[in-house]
Image 1 (cartoon, helix red, strand yellow):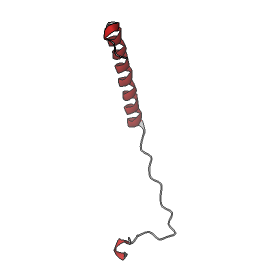
Image 2: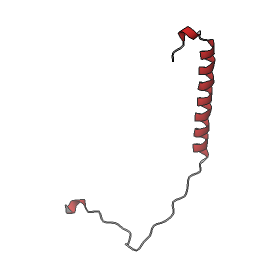
Image 3: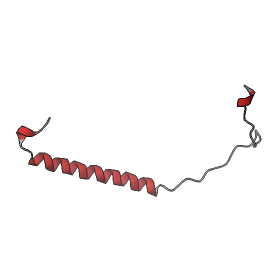
Length: 59
């Protein structure tokens, strides 16, 4: 059981430090791209459904 004990370099009174917050530009760009892709796919599905005769449409 003692083999699983880890020795830490920090004293118990140390509270830690702040970590810099990464910029959100990449996350926003990814979310925007996903929204754009979804809108394009929905538009395509609507166009295909409007061209398909009613007898061949799936519900």
